[in-house]
Image 1 (spheres, rainbow, N blue to C red):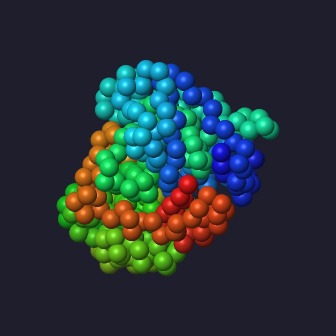
Image 2 (image 1 turned 90 degrees about the horizontal axis):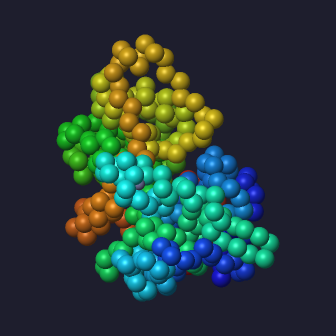
Length: 358
Ligand SMILES: [Zn+2]
Ligand SMILES: [Zn+2]
């Protein structure tokens, strides 16, 4: 079957090969025919080495498709079921799962060192244990979450990562208070989802911050009240908050420099929500005086910061009711063969979300 493979960390281009086989099928596993997959910024971060990932590997972790076959002991799924791929499956029994914080379950990561694919040249890994830039994946049954018939594959794919992450940051982690002021730094698919979440919660002011003009325009369509480039942030803080700082600032870039900017633009007693996925050697500096004296709450948000399956259901309900726009997030559509063009669009920042039809 076909899959897009990165041979070595640091390479910029993927090679679409047709001699790849999904491996590991057996008890507790399912085979999924991937139909649509989104391109998430984390895929680029894994390719460049910012996020840890063994190579060679098939990127992609935001996908949806249909079940081809279920392994022994899998009861809740059958061939033909439509599913979204969840890259962070909940085991249901660990302390984090029992607390309802399934986004912190580490069970799925236990398989991270196991190859998901094979070709004549040897083992190939799947990003985050999935690897959805492929026609077929074999995953734990817990990674395949059934979706209702009215949810198209391209929409379902987005729910698998970006939308869940961004909406959840506003709805679960920040629990934005109605009437508050919000700034979102970084307005790709995840940032725009945070904008939509803040709007749903009734934020009075939502300032979208991004260096790319097309993203700023998009942010306004999705509910931002103001969209500015990073160098205009000081003025916006003055105008919108009288210089005090925003009640909530979402950092959706994953760099210490933007996190520091976000911290400085959060009001005393306000909330900085860290959504971006950053590197292990990138350190955020805070001095002990400001940390204590300004009483800013720093809330990291991993995969939406709440029960993952509950977040999926909530997103589907909001989408069905027309309260969040998911189709509008898909600004580009490509076939697997055009994956490198899609990567370039992501790098230039012109895409919110690219849907790869497989
Ligand atoms: Zn667990
Ligand atoms: Zn992602």
